Image 1: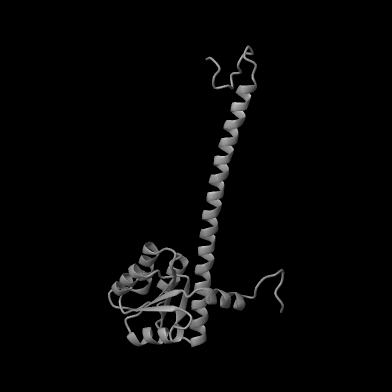
Image 2 (image 1 turned 180 degrees about the horizontal axis):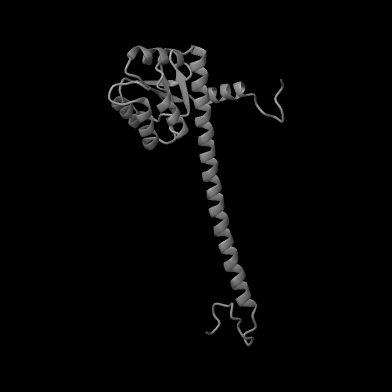
Length: 195
């Protein structure tokens, strides 16, 4: 089906987004072979960082600008949901993804509903499924960054317009005072009018 009203099909849009920039993906899993397999699968499209613990993940997030954080749910010392909740506080712009091979769906559903997680991926995954999920996360990151940039631009424009309005009001006031005959009484609206 051809695109309507100049819209770019989603697959083309994702491809063009990925070609424009290489997003940084942090994978956190206590199993090194999982980190390695994700790295090998996605390294051509993404800058992939591997962490085998939450602490290592936090350290990497301080050293690099991370766009997407993907964590296993079942890890020693901290669950993936807890980790991603902390990531949201430390790095709110990062898109958060969770994966697990266990049926711990109650906490996963709660985390998704609370807005802590963008997407859930079940282990084991198909390579195409994981690639598409991370591409969607990258597209979401770009979308949110564009919204934030546009918001900043609009706020700057509003600030400029407010300054311009203030300058015009001052000029109108100055011109009114200048045009008043010297012997005419001043109006109560005039700031120079006697009380």
